[in-house]
Length: 308
Image 1 (spheres, rainbow, N blue to C red):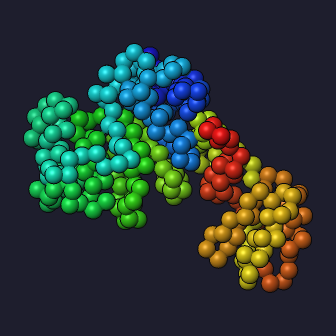
Image 2 (image 1 turned 135 degrees about the vertical axis):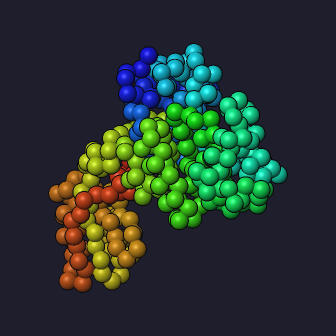
Image 3 (image 1 turned 90 degrees about the vertical axis):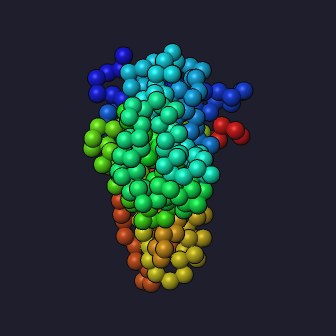
């Protein structure tokens, strides 16, 4: 059994496809009621890891529990208590919202099915659209339907794989408000995302790159572990400044953020020397705390692709 208070408690979880290791000996503990974010580039192993946690894939090595059930031996039990929202919309487009939810409730053998479907429609604001075909819904409404379907059997853990890709900012914000409401009731949420503003709404984060876990902790802890020094510069002809800086030792990234450049590196002294070489009265330089995106890009740049 897992430690009290932990929804996920796994050690050394590994998955290989042929001679490629796509998830490499990952240790992870997620507390009950926690919103835990997974960051990482495409192909980093996030989805594969999630599928092992919810019983859809069997690890090649490692051990541990999900919701107290053994991830190697009790996959059927895990599936009954997990809601999994995939990257792609995976419900029947020629059925209505209500019909889709009723079908999923049948699959899970939900007691008092009709009442459960009605409650789900009301909770996620779908009641007025309940007769609308799923194929006619916008991205944001499809997202709501998918979340409602994940919750219909009252799971203890939600696994959400890039759930807000392709939806507008308003729908994303409403979705995250609902996720925080659910977590406040004790539901555990494991979510993958590429959006830094969403990552900052998680209680804790883990960063995966090409199968390896490179960083984990709160947002502040992940940023601190990156060890980056970052400056911002504003003024005219920023592309020219960026080009000049990229050739200097100590400058590891130069990234445009609107009308500002972020200039970062791990060696503060060398970075200061590089900046001194291009300073002039036309530009304003300010040393700032590195952001999550700065650290994200730095980790991507230093990670080794396991398919090379």
